[in-house]
Image (cartoon, rainbow, N blue to C red; front, side):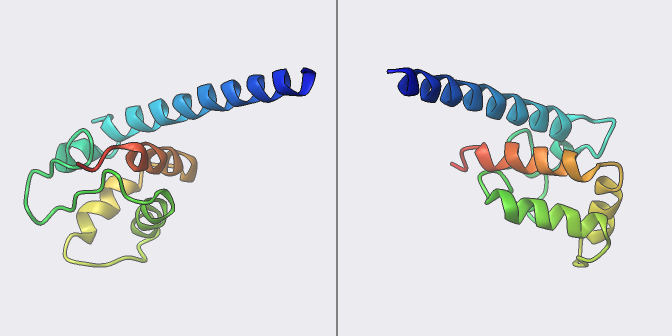
Length: 109
């Protein structure tokens, strides 16, 4: 019984922590004073303002993290890379991780 209670408490604690990280990621993603991600990709990452901008909501968390990090480090260069380099330069690795966590939790429908 005691082990069940510990497991339940751990599970609830993890859920609360995960939601907090997702909320922080959303706040960073939407923050217009930082990179302004939502300005181009929309609040959920699936409402791009131009057809050439990708839908990023619901993508794999590690994929999103790596793509944003590569833009920040100027390793990824495609037709839109200058916009993304500028957008990502203000974020720390931890902030990028949180945004990737938020975007991966978004329903991609």
